Amino acid sequence: MATLDQFPQRDGLYRIMPDAVAVHDRYQDRVRMLDRVASEIWLRADGETSLRDIARDIAVLGNVPIDVMYQTASILAVLMNSEGILYSSNTPETLPYHLQIPQEDQDLDRMLASMVAAGWLNQ
Image (tube, rainbow, N blue to C red; front, side, top):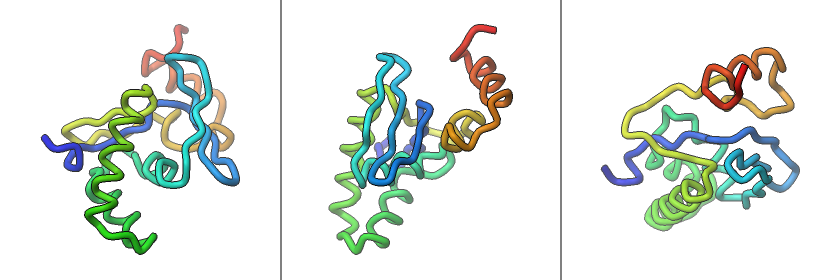
């Protein structure tokens, strides 16, 4: 399946900053700062929207040629995947609670329960 036809999913707790998105890389225990386009892809990577649809939306909003955004989105998705902060599935999947919204907007108890259920934390 082509990268554009997959469903990208966030894989890290995150905060929305004034000029970027800060993502906690849980595998290397560090924060990754995403640039403007990577941030747009990240925030739209809900597990239920294809990368093709995400790229199309970003292209239209940014007045960027669609082919350029398809290529850019594919490259950024592969890079974020290799960094361990995003992964893609061949089928749509709903994100667990702790990945759905920025960390500062989450209910702490619900976030912890979601992280335990997803295997991120031991009880």
